[in-house]
Length: 476
Image (cartoon, rainbow, N blue to C red):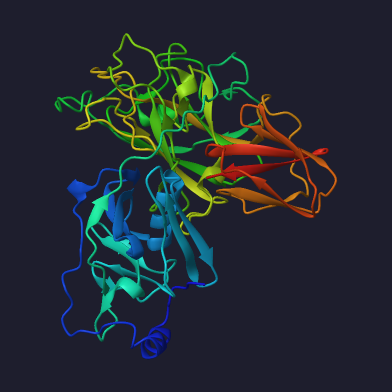
């Protein structure tokens, strides 16, 4: 099993044992690298960026992803988690010492990092800390490899000289998501629903331009108080963010992760098809923000104009997919696994306007790197996403999902990638239901430790029903 060495003494021991297998030189060759403008696939959200590369030595392939983040720095663990959360082709397994497996699979490659120990460097200098303690900063390049294909000097600096190629965008998720209010199995909540236990108590807005391609006038409609307190079904009581504008919402009591949906974002769309969208990010410290991985299956070959429309069934994890008075639901389980995020203590929610241009110079992308197409330009004072409020929920379960309880079924790993294990339910029938309430799998639990395959399903929220009990499963 492979481990990350986190202490200098262990590195020293490793070096002494493996001196015959690793070439030590006084001057290392130039460490292969890649520039930001070469990256083809960016994941995450924020104004800062770093690059993650993985070198599969046996096949002489090195692949690179770009990661955007907020704050002065990001933990290596969180950077890697973002890549795996957005791109289902790569998978990191964790053990007591850190990473135990790194695999990548697509239509061309089936790769696994090989060797006795995982090693990584930051900007060509060996990282002396584990991934949950090592911070990287704006512009840094993090490189994973194996000592069997690396070259090191006496100071344990490893370099990998395999040329790095940027990874292409991910495979689109062709799932049909929940639709408009009133349609079968829609997932939304009304502004006056009794499941709402609170609203944002503070708001700070950074306005964007009315048209980012013509940066003259900023959006100006409404004010920050329009996003504080209860939303309404009015189209007037909102604050407009403008192109790529943002709003940071705060709450008198932190939001916790409950058994159902945890909060909802309200926009003021006049109808069910003029959908102005926004990314949603959360933070438990007001510094480090993490973006919900969104999906937009809207075709982007023709620009949607102010006279165009967006099909809500093509949209997931983007605010603004419902008309005024109805909030788009978000589940904090989607962001579980981040080291620097406590999903039981969410103090800040940030809403960032989606620039719906299909011009890559201005447009913004979903989790798979696809340009998000929504009405553009909206060149007026109320341009961009119009925020009406953010509601705090107490474990809201839409009617589309029946008989949800949070009982004693033991399912692991959860979140999962390829499978889940179910303990101590032998002899019982099981049903797997998606977030729309549709049955997608049935079977029987034949063993005390039964494995259920999840690899054929898209990323998202699922519900495993066994007898009278139901447990939520998050599929990465």
